[in-house]
Image 1 (cartoon, rainbow, N blue to C red):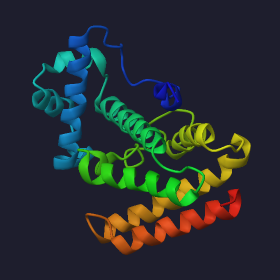
Image 2 (image 1 turned 30 degrees about the horizontal axis):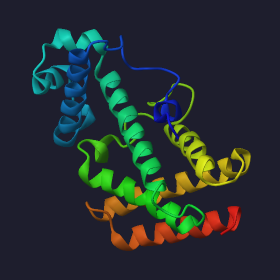
Image 3 (image 1 turned 180 degrees about the vertical axis):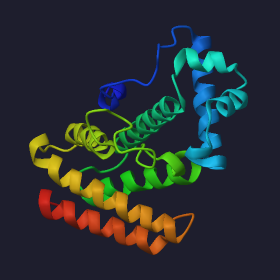
Image 4 (image 1 turned 90 degrees about the horizontal axis):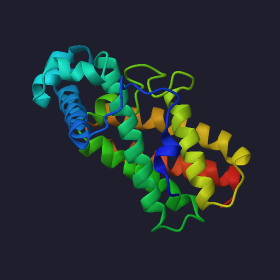
Length: 212
């Protein structure tokens, strides 16, 4: 798939204005990086635009040029998380046998788990749900945005029509979301037994609905 942004683009953008110059784009990235670090340290409730600006090394007024409030900053961070997830999945699909759900589910969950453990702020905000259920898009739940992105991505690799895979993918995403949250409640690094059972459950379910 040549345009990952098209896959993940939400109906609304949190940015007041798009950074045109490279210098402005880098400044916005620093703000997002700063907010990610701070989310791990103080949580969403403790996050403020003043803290973000200070950590990013910019004036608060500079932050407000692009974001109206901290919610918008975290919304942009959640959108960036999703774009990075879809990009990583797309790249992984180029190296695995997508004819088998076992490999597909392994790829999806392994990338999600790696982001949860390694990407600053991801364990706090994920794709937006800990903040609010429609953070990525005003018109769709966060999980629905993920489902739509995965459906487009999967149907470009697996020869199945979108109308056949959307509901099974929706159920798989909701199930995996709940089970992985449970895994990280039991163990900060993700309980390995729960993760293994989650993979088996999702693989068996998708195989039963969409074939081996």
